[in-house]
Amino acid sequence: RQGPGAAGATTCLLLSDQHGNLTRILRIGHTPETGWTRTALLAAGLSAVARSAEASGSTGGYRPSGKLGELVRARDPVCTFPGCGVAAGRADLDHTIPHPRGPTSVQNLSPRSRRCHRYKTAGLWHVQAEVDGTGHVTADRWTSPIGAHQDVQVPPLPGHAPGEAYAPV
Image 1: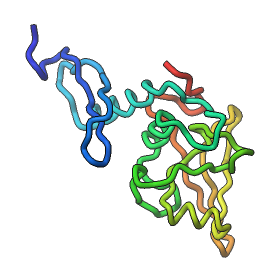
Image 2 (image 1 turned 180 degrees about the horizontal axis):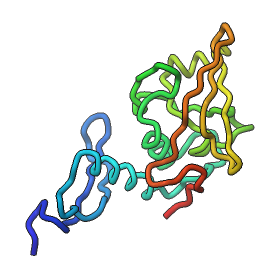
Image 3 (image 1 turned 45 degrees about the horizontal axis):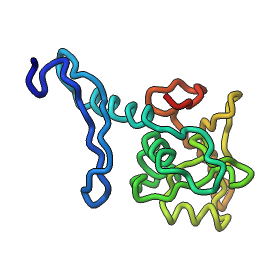
């Protein structure tokens, strides 16, 4: 039997809320022979969050489920407005294509700070989703009040290829 932290041992990720209360425990896999590097541990943790989602498609309603919110925040750790660095955990989950025209789905939600969300909602800034042939949003094209454009790429979820469906596992 191997001791804790030994190669081959199961590694778990402990998730907590903003108050430090334990909310979930995710198994992220076996410890590699060479041990965990910070990059490998982060990638495995993000992948485990994505794999654990039960509702990775559209919710049908306006508000995203907790699992769907976790997926969006795993993909985008900060506000997706150009130049904003507010952490996704402190941001609103905003529809790029407004609901009900756009679905409440991982492809159509982005974390936006309250201020950036209000800029968009008030019509000061406009965002248009760039969608690939599979229906996935690949970038947000922001238009400023003076008409300047800035594109912000929307990465695929950890563990998924661009354009790959986000099916529950």
